[in-house]
Length: 315
Image 1 (cartoon, rainbow, N blue to C red):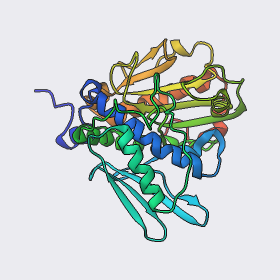
Image 2: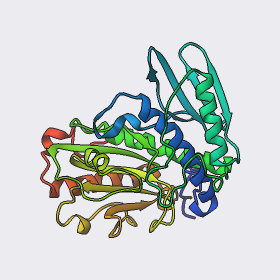
Image 3: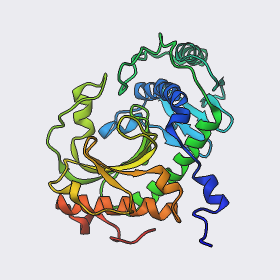
Image 4: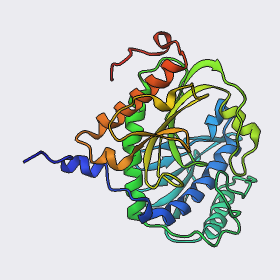
């Protein structure tokens, strides 16, 4: 009898994650993370490629990390085990908002009340970004689902992606982004850079100025990430792409079997379901990250000897 694809521990680490089963909760959580992300945008010092706006995976959910507010510090955490939003300051003050089914407008009103109660006075733009047909956060009575079990499964998968992306990032000694969560596109990502400037970015995202996109893509990059899915991608997936895309990349041979190039997104895609049912999910993801990077770096003529710690060696 063949060995099962996953041990019980592996199956728990890589849970089932069907987009159809939690798309409404995903939509609500996406908007809640935008509230917190906009707070980070307002408070965090500016960094290249808008890295200062991102959130980070923690052992219980997502965090802003400490943000300055005058002489104080504030940290906001999504606790996706206890299902609460925790807002804390360095002087010991704290507030908590339960994560439960409720409208975006209701949640946003309480969120602003919590900030004011802690003495945090901010003006946040209420229009969500990178979402087609977005409704202002102040007016959104449409989205209000919250399936705590489904959200917890998504976060468990995110923890695994974060772990493997950090291992992948450690093998690169050139300029590289942190492994961070972008609340606009709702994906976890890590990006490597050649050191050369890129041509001005052409293209836009809903409610995002062109100047923001040009800064995000100001230098040559090869990026990889993990995303719940949507549009042409019907379920969660790992992705990888290069900007600018070198000629011939879409025809490159990549690993593992089942990964493919999506001509609409112009990205390589590795379905999450293929990963979680693989004999070794870790190897499936690392093969994807390594092979897509190697193909793009070769075709774009990156100086790999100067940029990589030890090509081909996993840490």
